[in-house]
Length: 244
Image (cartoon, rainbow, N blue to C red):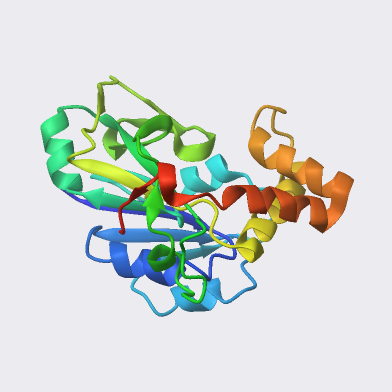
């Protein structure tokens, strides 16, 4: 069974080394679309055995760019991913156990906390507390390329012929998600992301969370956006310590 990961990145220098270190060897092939990174991410990719597509358009056509990578693959399974998602567990085993041709994967969201060692530059080592519950709210999917038709924005679902959907048991396969990692990353994420959404013609509901944060920035500037970042730093009291 061939596993191909299709990864979309833009300015992920804080986490891309950790992502590649963790996943090289888990996948048979990694195809990366770099969306005009300027922070060293593109140069870091050159140090690893991955295939890179340079996409310079800044209108965040995520589904279109992911579809392009998927169509480079002729057989096996596709794992669509972002650089803040770490696939933990036995992917081969989860696929074989499922009997399906599309598998939904649950996620565990990690949060920066007041207990973190902020002198640690690697966010995956620094951020060790996650939600107590595993959630389906941000479920992602992996699927057989032989039955692939098209992928949805966000990689949450895909259109599959002869659909046989399964949900991976979190004991077998789960995504560790690190969405908010530092003020610098948070600022880039929502300012660049909001600007990109302004440039495309997607329905208003697409990217609503990003658009809401960008609206706060446009109305109140960096001070208002920084206040949103401060809300992301939680007390560890109601979280679970679970280092990756």
